[in-house]
Image 1 (tube, helix red, strand yellow):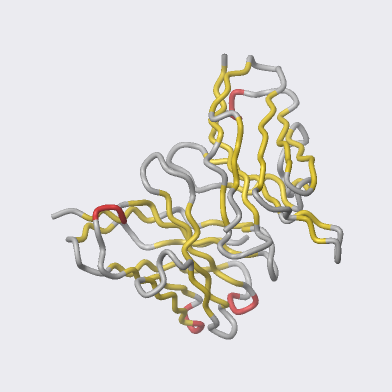
Image 2: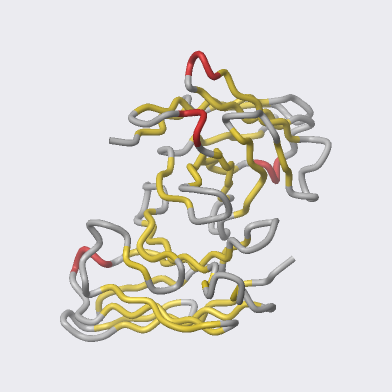
Length: 119
Length: 113
């Protein structure tokens, strides 16, 4: 059974960085792409970027270009998303999600990580 | 970017009745090369991550009750819950995955009347 387990909630000050992890189990980690999606309070889901867990290729939304970095540790079957220069508008639940195959839907999601940006 | 617009924003339906949610994309999400619509529907309950219901516009994910169905092509799509159950109370999102950035609709909240 596929599981994506994310790291716990974070509270950060404006200007800081946050790194969220997403540990995969139940499948071959390097055969899939991991996406990162966030949801601010009362807002729609917002796609941030993806990482190919096999070759490490990445692609980011223009909105977050320069502030977001996705990495992975294949030995730990874990993907990471780091967001820098945090501001209050970055307060949101951040999700990782697995892409079932090349250019397709997200078939499994992590439980979400709440990141609160506050001074 | 492809803009996804859902209607209505919310609806209240009696138990056992039909619920219909619409989704429109600002550009076609249909690919002639493989005859597929790159459109998915997700269900999100409070405090939970989204759950995949439908992909390729009309293919039901394994384990999803058959009261959920998807239809449409090109730019106009529909999610139908044929007989609403109490456990279907949730927010439903459509998503296009034919281009980056992957974009979602604003969500439709389904409640019991």
